[in-house]
Image (cartoon, rainbow, N blue to C red; front, side):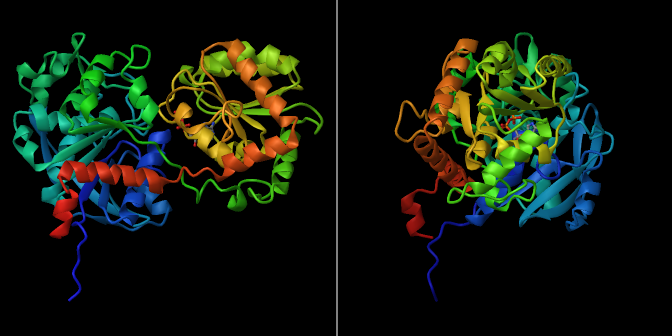
Length: 498
Ligand code: ADP
């Protein structure tokens, strides 16, 4: 009989508040939708647990996915009563996904609480506990719980401090991935007793954070390993500027912290086979990109003549550097650039960008809604992508724009610094970077990019390098597998015996 020397398949449950295409509000949804599949392709028995918010089971049905009920319910004691959860199992590209239904708790289709209170975070305490109860109901027991952001960090918090669940601590390893430190799950401490935590965990070494409970802080302390979604962000979060109050905790936890870059799904983001753009093109033949540019100009009501076409695609929030764009706008437009800005988000920013577009009808166009088609068309039709983020855990927009030959002009922070190489600073350049959060710096970087566009040979080379850079999930998945192997203690010696 043929010997099988492969390590046993590790069993990993991703616990997540979002998972594309069922639930997506941002990059976290993309990651939870793509990473488990990439891990499974490498032989990890990877599954996911996602709350069945209102409408999610209908979406499963609309997508024609299989869905069957797990016969056994799971039960969790919270706030002096028992909540029962019903599990449904579907299959997404070969990944088993458990959908957790609890109609009294998962009532909000918006996913995240508008205001943070002990009551509004209760569904996520339930989610964490359900991850620990899943084995009994699903008859499949993970070795590793991979937790995404504060809503899932509750599982490791329960394993460390809960009166009952701490008994299970030896049975699971936990990985906490921080997608965005701006969201930490901070609430009053009055809920702790009802959730099943002893008073002692409300301390500086526990859940306490300036007199409140901080669920992400608890998760950071409790998890066996922590990851951020890019290597640079793992450094940024240990600094005063990037740590959002948790820099001390993250610095103290640096021994179990690593940064693993997100990938993008090239089955979706491929200009040669993108049904949402006017003409296909590739690194070998860029003719279609010119057609996409003409179409975008037509949409804006502009003629083909004129300077560089700068596009922004992202949420209209402080993080994305909207302030910097607005502060640089008059200068950028006066120097011959044209700006297309696509984003939904904060009404204040929406009003400000709309007002700016009204002031410059021939040079600035905005679309303040979330629309996949418009976003794809802007990625394909633009010359440059503006991404002057204040902070950026990873960023997907710059990876997508590079695949479309639209060259990023970005602030060198977080994942942007890890993925964009400055074309004036290196022969391997794929974009243009600036460091200080300052309008003059952004304007200068755009000038450098416009200058490079004036040299078609050099510009073509930058585009080639950007379009052929590989940010696929396969690489990131391998880094996560290494982490799992480290946690499970499978070294090369042990491999020999399997
Ligand atoms: P974040 O997760 O912080 O929002 P990322 O750059 O990681 O930022 O991911 C943003 C994703 O959302 C990208 O796929 C981007 O194309 C998409 N996106 C952002 N705004 C819009 C919009 N208004 N319409 C369509 N897609 C958008």
